[in-house]
Length: 323
Image 1 (cartoon, rainbow, N blue to C red):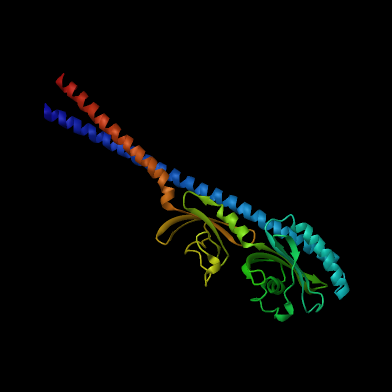
Image 2: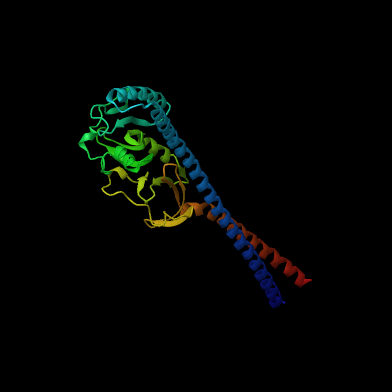
């Protein structure tokens, strides 16, 4: 009788264990899939929010410079020194009104090519604690304007012949690191100069710093070639060589799984309107933490239920056999 009771109990328990194990496995798998999908959605949502904030900022700068450029095209009526000087004064007034509506502007300028005039140089306004003041301009005639490694805010748009966003560079005159957007000016097909705005690097950095997720998720930006422009965990400005993004982050796939300094990470990237990339990255361990915690709770509940079922079945089978 005891042998029969043991066999029935064992068979029943095996069936229950198998059934509950399957259910537990499916439950844990479903939780993992839901958790990963949720993490991907959160990564993308936060990255999209950051993208919109940065693009709104960059586009406001572009709009200001483009409006000045359009005004310059309609107002410039000759390259004689007297006409150029009067034109610059009118343009400065327009520029000043537009810049007051643009956050984070460090400098704005309209510089004339020395090949056009040796006397009329243009203007350069700089923001400081006292407001926006006129600053002494750099003597462009001391440089070869065909060399795009120097005076990049002037030489690059001159060489390309089109509006251009430049990656961060250091301005020796101000001792500051800036982003800039520059538009070349032409009159009758002849290059005249450049209008542009320089943005405080740290204003952009602050926007990026506010893009966070989980405990250790952070955002950073890089250019098309993979050079890191700003990273909250690296002092990029003091490095002798510009750091590169980890291998795999230049993939065309929006979601990227990679390993950095021995830590598995999940990242998402989106393009910015100035040609750069915004990346948001989170350790996989933190993504997995939520669904693993719920999985442990499910397994614990299943274990308790299994123990309870076994006890009930053992009692019921004992009563059945005795009867």
